[in-house]
Image (cartoon, rainbow, N blue to C red; front, side, top):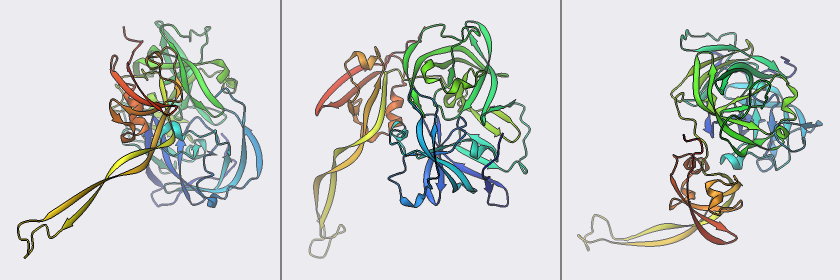
Length: 431
């Protein structure tokens, strides 16, 4: 592993700090400060460069220095994206600070993951933070703990499993096992905390890694250079030493999305957020080890979106709200002239407020939502008779993960016309 640029140091005597994060769609969203400006970053073990984007409307005080133009590649079907390499930035995560942080600033407005998450997101950080610390990731209490390797002490844990990590281009890999068609297959997987799925596998018939049973074609997510599509299915079992998980969600991305990532020919896929969150982790890049300890999410069912709808918070809409103005005459406790009566006038007014608008941006063919006539571009006004402005994007999306047969009623706006659709969630993997 290389250490060419600046290092993080923790600015307190204990050489350790705990930072709370938000867990959105199985992704860790972390508060980060760059050149004095408070931002939100995705903590992503799958990236080896710190990238900043979606910042043009924040402030000029970021002072991103344009030093060198480069092109970045990653997951997705699109072309490489243009970025400006900037050195000498001050980056803080809690009490950890790096005064010579290298950043890759992307000005392309299309690289914006915030609408899919429903929360602000200004960049991605991975290797640059992990390389200098022992990092504990507690998915249940939603915090990371950064500790200087010189003072970190491991606690005895008989229920933990510690694995060695291998690195390729500063990205961590582990060996584990998948069970497909009753066959145990050893696989080398990228540890990818920046992915929201459970498991990605790359089809390889020579190894027995392929879609064996029922599947459906779907949008899998956004990569650095575009959208990723593939097949969703389940595998019988996934194992990390003695930890075994059954009926695990797995996605098989189409090859056209993997041209760049397949440069590492030994890689068989990725272990991502929906699987990682079932453990609390100790990630030790300096020692090249990772420790897994199962948490209360370990036995959670592997669910998936049964509606066929992908939503995005990409606009706002005007919502009429009640505004109560209380006008009182006299004293509520009475007065000398009017000891027992007090008149209160309640004047109800309506105001217009801007609320987030959730629109359909992906619609799976032959899904329940598609079959009843919903379309890409529809703006969802209400779900099950309750206005969507009462929910976060994550709360609305979570309703699509409900049980088989659950009734969903959507009121949408299409070309200025309000329409109502009813469909029932469908679990194609039910026996």
